[in-house]
Image (cartoon, rainbow, N blue to C red; front, side, top):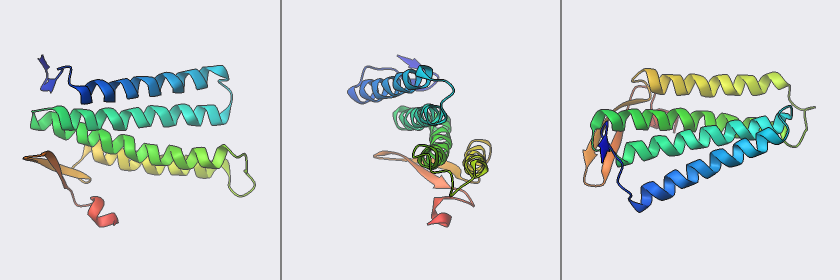
Length: 151
């Protein structure tokens, strides 16, 4: 079955990856709804959402046969990965409850930085410019502010 260029066959990689993403979201919901007011439970919930966004973006990018859908999947994966890094840093600040070294505003600044990189990857060609197809799948061609610039 093929919907919008994404193959929905029951391939083992698709089933396993989707199962991992669904279990991850359910664990995030379960942890979050045990105590909604807890700061580290909210951070863990955001971490699970961004991890699932990254996983599903890579799944879309690698399992599609359409170049435009693959490009969108790769940009979605970059959005999830940039916010995943921000949420991991935010979680590491909040979880041990050592707030005497940092202010809570620094966590918001880290999230804004991750969101800025993610929005740049989705809405422009600055991070991921295009993709090309080779024998192994799609390869990202980075834009002006790509990963090679940061390395």
